[in-house]
Image 1 (cartoon, one colour):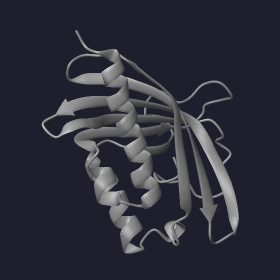
Image 2 (cartoon, helix red, strand yellow):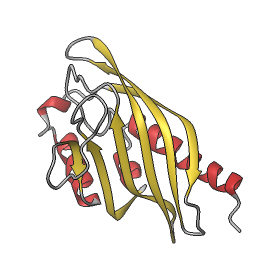
Image 3 (cartoon, rainbow, N blue to C red):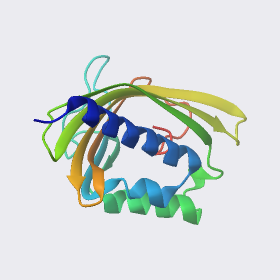
Image 4 (spheres, rainbow, N blue to C red):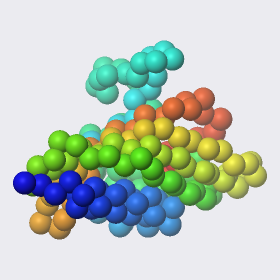
Length: 167
């Protein structure tokens, strides 16, 4: 029998750690939270109440089909080849309302809400992004890892650039 309280504590710590690494711009540590075969997906909205359902055939705000895509994104951020990310904004993520389901000894689904406060140096403005997360976690030899991150951005009028560190 899986202890739901322990799983919730472990899942919460992983989500808080992910937020911390993003805010601290600790890219290597952030990437290590993901499995090699992970999926990172933030669908676009079809209308006011429905998001896209297929990242292969419909528009997505962000989509990576493996950790290699996240690694490439981090490389672009670090190298300065992402002009929109220079200088990087300061961010502060809050993850709340964490719930676990589909518990087994080596996997779980974690749903939560999130908010990210971002300060953009170029415009001297702050923006707030918020929405829902669904993380699928897998137990590995190195501990729990994210094998799928699904992000629903609730305020999808995007006044500036949007990247993995904003959500």
